Image 1 (cartoon, rainbow, N blue to C red):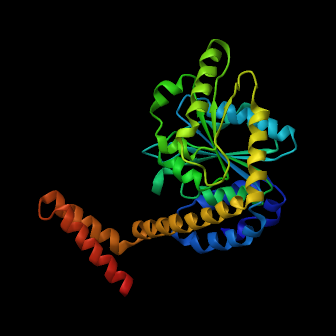
Image 2 (image 1 turned 60 degrees about the horizontal axis):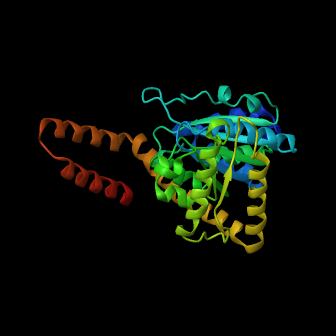
Image 3 (image 1 turned 30 degrees about the vertical axis):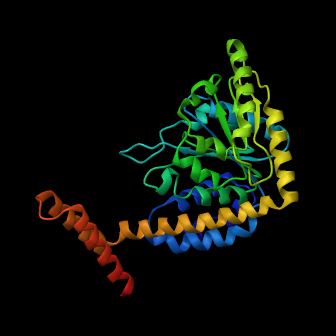
Amino acid sequence: MHQQIDIPALLDGDRNALSRAITFIESNRPGDRESKWALLEQLLPHTGKSIRVAISGAPGVGKSSFIDRLGAYLIASGHRVGVLAIDPSSSNSGGSILGDRTRMTSLSAHSNAFIRPSPAADTLGGIAARSKEVMLLMEAAGYDIILIETVGVGQSEVAARYMVDYFMLLLLPGAGDDLQGIKRGIMEMADLLIVHKSDGDQLPLAQRTAQHFKAAMHLFPPKPSGVPVEVARVSSLQNKGIEEVWQRVMKYVDTTEKNGYFQRWRRSQEMHWLEEGSMQILLDYFKNSPELQSRLNALKSQILSGDTNPVAALHTIDHFIKKLLHD
C-alpha cells in the first residue's frame, strides 16, 4: 500500500494524497507495519514546523464552534489549519460518531483547512492510536497550525498534552462554582483557561467566573515553561476574543523558544511517543498473535467453567509471554 501513496503530491499539499496516507497509517493490518514505518521515515524530515494546540473541555462547552472561529481567523491570517478531532467511537463498529464537518461549518468549506476525525476506540489511554502519526502527516502536507480537539476531560487530555505545545481548556460561565467535574490535574495541564460563551445573559456570570479563576491562579504550582497560566473570555457566537487568544499563543511560543523550554518539551513529547508507541506495538502483537490468542481463549473457557481463576490465568499468560520472548 505504501507504494500507492503519492508522497510528492502529499508534500505539495494534495488533500486526496493526505487522506489516503492517513487511512493507511490508521490501518490495523499487521502486514502493513513495515510499510508504515518506511512512509513515516520518509516524511519525518518535513514535519515539526507547525504550532500544535490542544482544545479541551467538557461536552457542551462549545469546543467545535470555538475551533471553527479560531481556524477561520488563522486561515484569514495566511495559515493552513489541520484539525484532528479525537472522537468517541461506536462500541460496535469502532467508527467515529461525531459529525465534525457539520459542526465546523466555516472550516469544512475552506481549501486551507483539513479536518480529520480520529476514532479513539481500542487504544491505550483513550486517544486514537495513530493520532501522533496523523498529526505528522498533516504537518508534512504543509499545515502549519494543528488543532487537536479532545473528547472531553479525562485520560485523552493527558495523552493530548504530550502531543502539543499549548493546551487550552474551555469552561462555561459558572464553572468556578463546581468546576463541572473537571479534575484539578486537567486544569494544571492548561496554559490558558477560556471562559467560553461569554455573551448575552451569560456575560455577567462569565465575567465573575473569569475573575474567580484569575484569583485562584496562585493556588496552582508554577509552570515548567516559566509562563503563568492565563484566563480569557471568548464568545464564538459574537466572534469576540479569538484574536486575543491567538496572540497569547504566539507570545507563549516566543517566550518558550527564547528560554529553551519549547525544544525541551518537544523532546519530552518524543520520549513519551516512544514509550506509548512501544506499549501499543506490544498490544497489537498480543492481539495478532495466534499462539497468544489461542492460549487466552483456552483460559477464558477455563474461567467460565470454574477450572481456574483470573490470577492463575494471568500467571500462565505471564510465563507464556516470557517463554515467547526468550525463544
